[in-house]
Image (cartoon, rainbow over all chains, first blue to last red; front, side, top):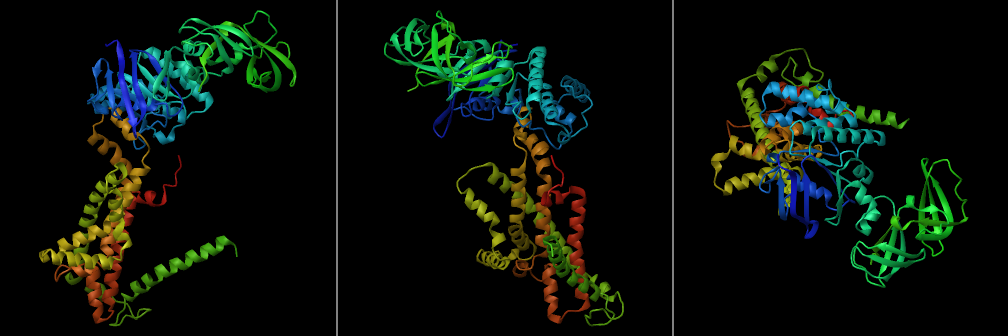
Length: 361
Length: 267
């Protein structure tokens, strides 16, 4: 078996001369769960459609299991797809839906029967074989779609927003089920989603896409903790941006000093920064505390605007003295009550929790 | 009077106007005398015996064959056109769309005269009779078959064809196992419309028949010159029953009504 299930090399697609996917390079290891995450229009679905063979790239190469598939139509690519709207065949029974790919591969009848039963068992739908897709719930239909794609043992399973049509509880259930299946079968999966929670929960690696490019590629921990760009910091999770000016510049990876209303901060710079450049300091709401700590790198003062109580945590909106609004997230640990609205408060964050990015033009 | 009652009254009136003449015609065919009287005077089956004479059966079978062949050709052409119009963007697409629906807007009489002139100019008078009639009827049936096929294609669940491709089905397998089964009831509905359109047509047929190759409607109209005899009433009832029976059979086996009126099922 090839080490890499999927390789994209310089892949591009133009729509009306505008690049929807712009020279993407990406390698997905065999058995890996990779997620393409990004806002709508970022090129993630276009990328998936090119891998599936539904769209022809304008440039670049796609390799599946080490073999170029540029000249292969969809039906020769040995891929499985699960669509957001399931795309089950409404005129066939559940068992016939699952058997479809095997019939196309001219698998012998007894083996089809056996493998269909196995696949249905895998998704907990044994005994549903004779039903019509119409007679199933959304979650059950999604399981059928999954079984139908898995039964052919594809080189790669593509999942196109597979959970978006399900309600919250079911979505979390299916999410867990898909990861369990993926680990158990060791199948390579590429999922497209705009839901960052979903991406963080299931992926070995996440490719965050923006404007047809991959902005950052890494595991859930690294893209959340060490966003490589302002876009990623903003897109993944919630982030406060405090404006500032570089006092002492540096090379990429070096230390720079930034003047902000929260004082002078010395931070690692992910990219080269020149003295005088406008930057923004990013800090996660859960890393801001109500505290007056002399040793904290970032110290802000402001007025409490409002509390948003969300059960397990509370989001507090604070207008800083300089006028920007930051959000503080406080977990519900049954500790001291939060400051009242209109109270003047002090906020603090450690330098290790702050990131510096060039301010958007 | 509540709006609902008003609606019921209107519907009743409409059905009365549709069915009363049929009832009258049907009962006239049982007249014992030579005159078309209503209510019928006496009871006799002699006019029915006369209606089953080869002189009437010949144009009747001619019309049935013509309608069957025209409907099949129009269905196949309509499918091709619908695929082209729904699935592809090509120069002149709007023109093709308009042309394929054109005969619906045009008075059939105009279509008939136009076809007559073209056949004349092309010097292919030899086509008069069955071949010319098939051409004419395909033209007037096409709007029905194109529309029903196009609507079914558009209404197909999104991405099922892509799902089939991804599972290894070749284009022809996708067509035979997924696309056609899913649009089948719409396509059959189009065929039924086309059959009835052809079978009941008079205006186009009038120009394209020749002696010995005439449709039932043209034959009836020709016979009217001799006055409305009870025989005509019998023949009229027969020509009425044929398409009705066809609709009943097709509806029973293919549930074409689901396509026209919706299935009444949800989900």
